Length: 259
Image (cartoon, rainbow, N blue to C red; front, side):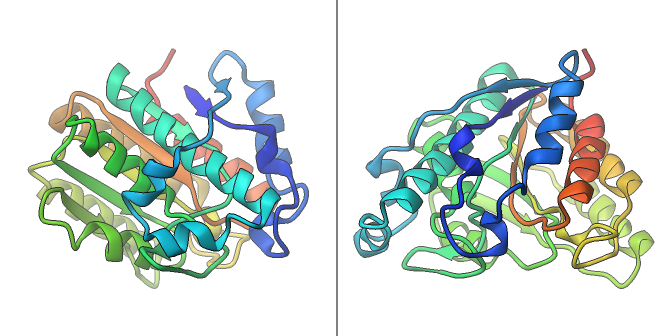
């Protein structure tokens, strides 16, 4: 499975939990121990025009003078774009192991450790290239992806259906996801805001590794039936470093085409 990652994502670019040192180390160790399954590719930075499809000029400039943060954020957005492009071109799964997260970034504001909206930027890039006119997003992060909703669901030229599940038990949570996937009849690509902070041992303490594997498998099956297998995920939240690695791997085992 193709994973997009840059060493710059490991830098301490901000003083928040999503930028804490060591946050991706267990996941990278797992990837490198399973080189027959995972392949890492280094992304390039996004361009200014990519950011401006999702954000205002003032929001783009807000981080321009914070040199280290700006560089990592542009690489994060670029990683999301390249993840989406790979999934679309090769009709397969891809994962953007990127920082900073983005699903709380709206057109002219951001919170929740986010700066630029990686998901919106990646989908609007595909749309600008006339590759997609519709998409489905599953955002299984603990926190509602308000930035994804604010940017993408207000557009008339791109139809985006977004699910942010919420339930008191794992069984009910999975029922919501499964039922929604059964309802979807239109999407040129399936995308996932993959925040693992809903996992057991993390802030949400709800979902098991098996739940992530099941969701990955269902998303794969839906993409094969609906959009020729085109599907991608990008990292959002996740703060228990070891649990993120376990749940990332479980999700990818369901989500990916087997070698």
